Image (tube, rainbow, N blue to C red; front, side):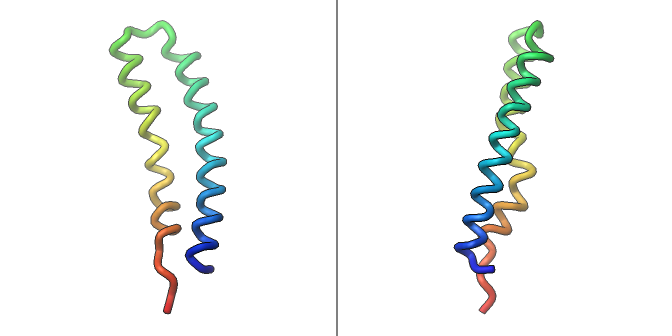
Amino acid sequence: MGMGTRKLVGTVVMLVFIGFYALFAMAVAEGRIRDASTAVQTIVYIVLGLIWVVPMLPLIRWMNKPDKA
């Protein structure tokens, strides 16, 4: 599979994942921490805003892998 195809597939997968993750993060934020203190809410929002990167790292590495010569 060429790099261009990998980037297309990876981009589509990433957009779908982020869409579902955003819905999950909103549900967690509204349902679980609504009555928490401001400090706890801030920490949870920061973590939820950054944690999506962890499962995407292998996909990003795969997308940027150079073509075999």
